[in-house]
Length: 565
Image (cartoon, rainbow, N blue to C red; front, side, top):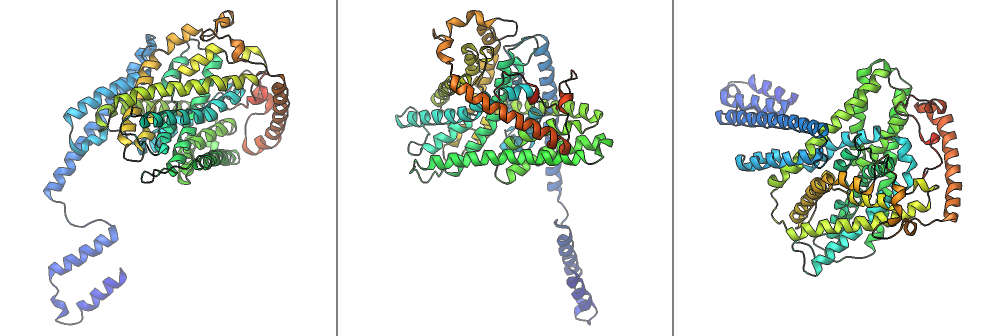
C-alpha cells in the first residue's frame, strides 16, 4: 500500500510526461486504493441498486412484523389452551397449525427467493434455536428424580435408540426391496439406516407440556422417564445420524456388514467425548465464577452464562462432536456447582430468562415446521412411505420400550418403583417426533432426500397433533395420574398378560447391582464433598437436605434407596 503511494508521488514529480496523468486515471487509482483499504467496491450505487435494497429492506421488515405478530398470537393461544384446559390441542400443535396457515399464505402471495424466509433452515435451527432449549432443559433439571431413574433413562435413550434405528431402517429397506416404497435405495441399506437414526429422535414436547400441567397430576415416575429419555435421545439420534452419514456413499451401493461395528464404535467414542467436553467446560466456568468477584456484577453473570451456553455447543460442533450432548451435561454441571456461585439476583434472573428464551425458541421451531408443509418444496412425497413410516415407528418403539423396561425392572429394588405394564404402554405412546428429526431429514444426503424429508414432516405432524392431543385420554385410561391407585387394577396387564410376566424378579442381579451402587455412591459423595465443591462451588451436603429446595442442590446423595443409581 505504501509503495503504491510512493511510486505515484515519484512519478508525479518526475517531469512533464508523467505529469500528464489524466484525472480519470487518477480517480481509478484512488478507487483501487480505497477498495483495497476498505474491502468494498468504491463505485457509487445505481438507482436500481438503491431501489432493490429498499425493496429488500421493506420485505424483511414486513416479514419480521409478521413473525412477531404470529409469535404473540401463539403465546395468547397457549394461554387460552392452558386457561381452558384444552388438552386435545397441545401448545406445540397450536403453533404448528398456525405455521401451516402462514406457510400457505406465503406460498400464495410470495414468490421467488423471498419464500426462503418462510422455509425451515436446519443450520438456523441447530445453531440459533436449539442451544437455549437444550441448555434450559439441563439447567432446570430436577437432578434427584433424573438420577434416581438414570438406569432406565440410559437404557431407553441409548439402547432404545439403537434398537429403533435398526428396526425402522431395516423395515424401510425391506419394504423398498419388495416394491412397496418408491424413491428409496434398494441396494444400499445405509440410506435406510440414516432415516432410522433421524426418525428415532423422540421429541415429546407436546406430551410433556400436557404431562407437566398441574391440573392433570401426571404420575411422577412417568414424567421423569419421558423427560429424561427425551433430552438424551435427541443427542444420541444426532450422533448416530452423523456416524452413519460418514459411511454413506450414494455412488457405491456395495454394503459391508463390517461397517456396522465400526460405526457403532465411532458412535460410542463421539458420545463419550461429547460428554467430556460439556463437563469440562462446565467445570471451567464454575471455577471462573468461584474464584472471581463477578457475582458483584449480576448483569455480567447472566451474560456470561448465556454466552458459555453457545460456546459449549459451538465447541463440540467445531470438533465434530455432539453439541446437544455436550450442552446438556454442561448445563447439569453449572446447575450443580455454579448456581451457588451466583448472586441471588442472578439466580432468579437466569432461571426466568432461560425459560422464557426456551419457550420462544420452541414456538418458532414449531411455527417453521408448520410452514414447511407449503414452503418445503418437496418433489417426491409418497403417501405410502409416510403411512408405513408411522407404523414402523410404533413397531420400533414397542420393541425397545417393553424389553428394556423388563431389564430395568430387574435392577429396581422395591415393587412400588417398578415400571408397570400400564406405564410402559404410555411410554410407548409418548414417543413423538419433532423438530430435530425434521431438521436432520433436511440434511439427508443422496438422491432421495426429498422423499425422506416429506415423510419425516408427515410423521412429525401426525405424532404431534394426533398422538399429543390424545395424551390426556391415554393418561386417564391407564390411570397414570397421582392419586389414582393403579395397583388395584394391575392384574389385567397388557393384552391379557399379567405384570408378573413382564416384571421378573432377579435376586442375583439385584444383589450385584446393590453392591456396586452403594460403593459408587459412597465414592462419589466423598469426592464431591471434599474436593469438587471446594474447587467449583455448590451446596454442602447438610445444606442440600434443607426445605429451601434451592436450585443446584446435589440431590443424588439424598435420594432414597429406591433409585437406579
